[in-house]
Image 1 (cartoon, helix red, strand yellow):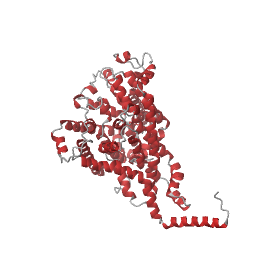
Image 2 (cartoon, one colour):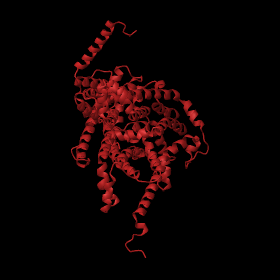
Image 3 (cartoon, chains in turn blue, brown):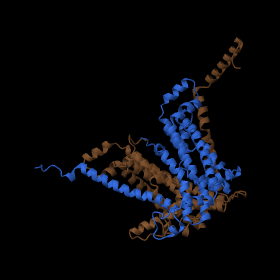
Image 4 (cartoon, one colour):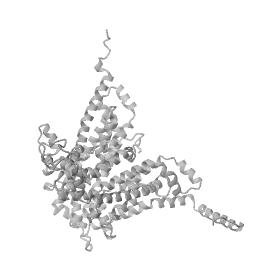
Length: 289
Length: 325
C-alpha cells in the first residue's frame, strides 16, 4: 500500500506543468489563428471574383483562383514606375542612414570630445519630440529651397542622422572593448581609419538592423510622399496605392491584390533577416541579453 | 616617379615626413579628440539645428502670426490660441478623439503585449514558430494594412463581423458608425501588439529563475509570482513602452487619413484626430500660423505628459542594483 503522504498523480508538479503547457499551447494556437486570419483573408480576397466577394455569407477559400486580378490591377496604374521610385528612395535613405548614423554613433561611443555627454542627452531628448511639431516648418523650409516635388526632402534627412539609429548603434558600439581602439591609436591610426577598419566590420549585425529598419521605414512612409510629391510619375507605392483606391473605388479584389504586392517585399525582408529585426528592437531598449 | 634617386631628394622626403609628424604631435590628444568628435557628429548637428531646433523656434514664432506661406507674417498675438478654444469647434473634437484613442490604446497595447510575452515565455512545443507568427503583423504597416482592415471591418461581408456572427453577435458597422470608428482602430492596433511583446520577452528572459524557485518554496501562486516578481523585474521596459507609446499614440494620423477618404475625418468627425486637423489647416487651407500654434500646444501637452510619466515612473519602476539609476 502507498503511504498516505504520497501525492496523487494529478497533484504532482510534473503533471501540473504538463497541464499548464497544454493550456498555453491551446491558447497560443487559437491566438495564432486570429493573428494569421487577416492575412489569409487578404490573399483569399485578392484571388476572388467581384461577385464572390459580394456574396453572403463570405467564402474562406476562393471558388476559382483569379490570378489575373494581380496582372489587371498592376496594369491599371503605373505600379512598375512607383515600385522603382520607392526602391530608389529606400536605397538612398538606407545608404545615408548606415554611413552617417554609424559615424555619429562612433563619436558618441568611442571619441572623448568635450561636451559629449551633454550632446548625447540632446540626441536622446529629440526622440521625445513628436514629429508633427516640426512638420510644418520643415515643409516651409523645403519649399523655400525649391525641393517640393523632388526626392530631396525624403532622402537628405536620412543623411543628417536619426536619434533612434544613433542610440541603437551607440549601445552596440559600447560593448566593443576600448583596448581595441587604444591599440589602433598607438599604431598611429586616426579615428576615420579606426571607424572604417575596425568599427564597421565589428558592428555589422547592428548595421544590418539599421539598414532594414531604414528600408522598412522608407517603404512604408506615406506622410513624406504625401507632403512633397505632386507628380504622379514621382509617386511611391504608398501614395500610389492610396490614389489607386480613388481609381478602382471598392473593387476589393484589385485593392487586396496590390496590397499583397506592396507588403510582399517587407515580409520577404522579415523572413530573411528575422534575427536582425528582433535584435534591433532589443538593443534599442537596452535589454540585450 | 616617386622613387627617390639622389640623397638630397631622400633627405627632403624625410624632412617632410618629420614636419608632418611634429604638427601631428603639436595638437594635444584632447584637441584631436575634439576635432574628430565634432567632425563625426557634424551631420547630426546640422540635422538638429536645421530640422529640429530651427523648425521648433520658427513654429513658435509663427504661432503668434497669421502666416500662410505666401503672405507676410503679421503678428496677431494669442489669437491663434484663442481661436482653438473659442471659435474652432473641430479643434475640441480632434482633441477629444485623440485623448480617447491615447487613453485606450496605451493601456490595451501594454497589457496585451505583457500578456502575450508571458505566454510566449513558457516552455511549449513550437515556441519559435509562435513567436515569429505573433510578431509578423508588427512589421506590416502603411496603406496596404489600412486597406486590409477596411475590408476586414466591412459591416456585411467582412471577416470580423462574420466571425462575430458565429457567436450570435451582430457586429457593428465599424468604420461607418461614429460610435465604433475608434474601437475599430484600436482593434487594428491590437493586431500588431507583437511588436511590444518582443521587448517584454527579452526582458522576461533576463529575470533570474532563482527568484521564481524561491517563491515556489514559499508556496507563492502564479498570480503572486507575476505581481511580486515578474512585474517589478520588467518595470523598466513597461516604463519605456508606456512613455514611447503615449507619444506615438498622440501622433495617430496615417490610419485616419487613409481610412476616411483623404482625411475627411470619418462619420461625424469621429476620426478627426489632432494631427489630422493640424494637417488640414496647414496643407488644405495653408493656415500655417494656426497649424504652428496647434503644433506647439501638442508639443507642450506631450512634454507635460512625459514629465508626469517620468515623475510617476520614479515611484514604481524597479531598477536592479539600487535606486541611484
